[in-house]
Length: 258
Image (cartoon, rainbow, N blue to C red):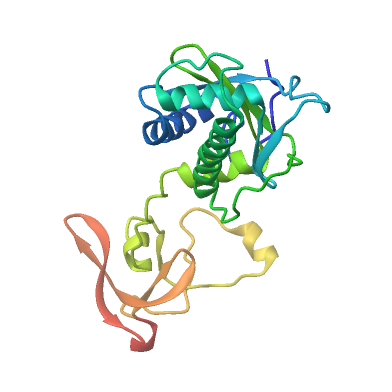
C-alpha cells in the first residue's frame, strides 16, 4: 500500500486516497482513451514509484512541473502505438523512420493526458520534456483493457488537492433573512414593574406577613413593562380579567424606542 498523504485541514482525511481519486481519474482516462485509441481503454491502479527507468535507460520525460510526470521508454512507445493501431506491434519490428513517428505520437498522447490533468487542477502550464520534482505524490500504473501495461503516471499531492477541491460540489447558497425574521421565534421575559420601595436593614428584619409596603407609585399609575430586564416603551394598567391580574397595554411612552 502507498503511504497515506495528509491532504489539507479543510479536506476530509481520505480526500486524496487512491479509492477517492479513482472516480475522477477513471473518467479522465476513459475520455483520453476514446480520443487516441482504436478500441483500447486505459485504466489506473495505484503502485509505487520504485521502478522508474534507471539512469542508463533511454527515456523521454514528459511532465508539468509541480503537477505530474510520465517517463516514456521504448516499451511505452510500443504499447501506446499498439493501442493506437489496435494490434500488437512485435518488439524490434519498427523501422527507424517509423519509430520516430511513433515516438512523436506517443509524446503527443501523453502530453494530451497531462494537459487534461492540468485543466482539472486549474493549471495553465504546458507539458515539458524533463523530469519533474513532485512533492509527496501518488503513482499509478496505466494499463490497457487487454492487460498491456503502458506507463507510470505520478501526480503531486498539491495537484491531487487542487483537482479534488475543484471537483467538489458547490456549497449551497446560504438562505438569508432579516434580523427581525431570524429573531421572531426567540423567547423573551416580560416583567411588569409595579413600583419600588426602600427600608432600612433594621426595619427589613422586622417585616412580618400582613405588613404593608408603600410603593413609589399609585395603583392607578402607568405600569412599565420590562423586556428581558430592560426598560421598554410599552406600559399599561393593572386590571382583573377573568379572576386574574393582568396588564392591559394602553400606551407607548416614547415612539423613538419602537
